[in-house]
Length: 160
Length: 160
DNA sequence: TTGCTCCTCACGTCACGTGAGGTGGC
DNA sequence: TTGCTCCTCACGTCACGTGAGGTGGC
Image 1 (cartoon, protein in one colour):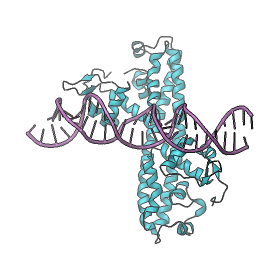
Image 2 (tube, each protein chain N blue to C red):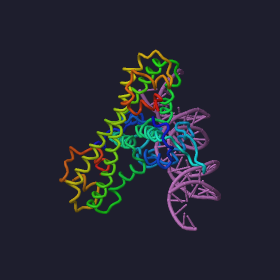
Image 3 (cartoon, chains in turn green, orange, blue, cyan):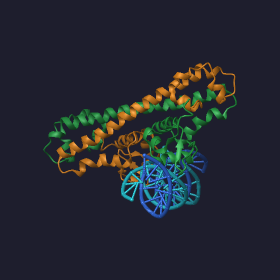
Image 4 (cartoon, rainbow over the protein chains, first blue to last red):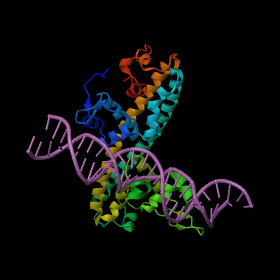
């Protein structure tokens, strides 16, 4: 199962999960991820599989989960007497997280498209502009279609 | 243009952008979003269009941008002498943000699928389980396909 | 008039970042 | 041996949250 694999150093953990050493130590402080032991020199050693757990935690964080929410997820099974009830509650929790993920995904998708549309306007109109960047000049510019500008462009290019 | 629309209260700003009053005041502290004035009682008043700017800021934050990055975006046009150069630099900045957004989108998509697969396992196998939630019992469970479990399930259900 | 919201400090919190001074490991 | 990384405090930082005590506005 990987439990007997040879232990892995903090450095390798950090590399695989794309976090920092401080973050891993902090997760240990709050009880999320503990090393299996230490080297003779006092360096932390982890199970090889723990890199995957760290990665999961890091991804849940990027997804907007708090450490408290993550701890709740990991603690749920252990905190219930029977598997049926634990399973039901966990399904509920996961459904909430998934719902938030879906909302976040649609928001990020819209934002990506909006920023992309701004780049397109900059490339097609502003890249050849010979004028200094002034509010009145840009507001009167005939190279851009003022009625169909992406939201991000309007605010960043000060057209509002 | 919306600049002459009747001013809008903090309450309406917060509602439209789904943030908090504290957050709006904080953005004012750091110079990101200033009211056009105050009511006779001292309450903040904003241009109607500013709700959209607040929404953009809030979305950029959800997307992982720091306030410093957001400030840089909004300040770029004003900080360059000619529009061509400002346009070029802004294209670069936006391209970076878009790239990060794409990475984040793929991460969140994978995570959503992983969590969804965990819910599916819980529904198909654990929901009918009569046993207490123990590590040995679950590790020996014949209702789940141990070779194809989603990563999140393995860690949350303590199968590693 | 009653409530709910807004106002301004100001301290608290979450999730780490960042030196300071010392040791480990290839 | 030289560097780079790790170790443990411990204080700093970012982006707000949360009362405390007082006023505004429908």
